[in-house]
Length: 251
Ligand SMILES: [Fe+2]
Ligand SMILES: [Fe+2]
Image 1 (cartoon, rainbow, N blue to C red):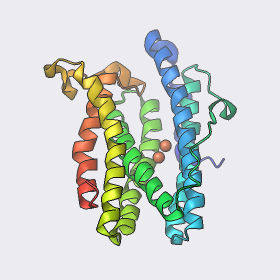
Image 2 (cartoon, rainbow, N blue to C red; image 1 turned 180 degrees about the horizontal axis):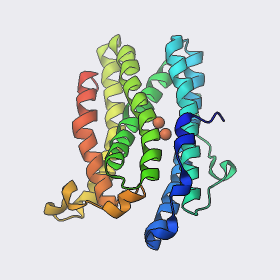
Image 3 (cartoon, rainbow, N blue to C red; image 1 turned 135 degrees about the vertical axis):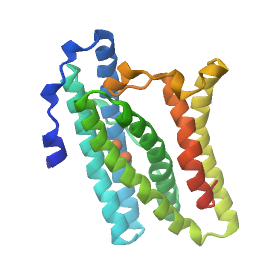
């Protein structure tokens, strides 16, 4: 894989896990190893999407953006792995984390393109940008910040690309089709929000605010507690995703 200047600039040796609380480091190893798995999954889904946009004859700039996404997600998997290793964790091998992804063969091609664009580039990226930006702003350690920054920059680009593509696809749909896509989008968004609401329901009302969960220690290693994650999910939806969906006629 090509090593980009950003990766070269990250001095992983500057991260000394021995200087950090042991429980936190152990937790971080597990989380960063699991993030290798989720980034690997993003590579798989983006690679499938690449074959879909090619088969559908999408404009070349769309194909290029998706091809770049495949490479970026691969880079994220590698960066997450390097962070995990720097923490003394065991980095999972591709063979351990490769899992079959849904076969969309039965879904008509045009629908597959729009379904992937909505689920991946519109919804999943919006939430992950929300979490990443919160961590980038608070990550105390320079290595953590550099890794998160490198990933957040790519994800923000994907997040910008999604609405454009979806807007073009839904523009000419007859109202009944658009209603069906609005329902599809709503179901996916609900999945994220329901998980968050289940967590928030267990909290006292006065604890359902971000400033109650400052978690500076966790932020040092790029971790988010359950409550903070749930609150960020809700905030990302309200501040970023919901307005975009309304603008696209999918909200
Ligand atoms: Fe990623
Ligand atoms: Fe991504």
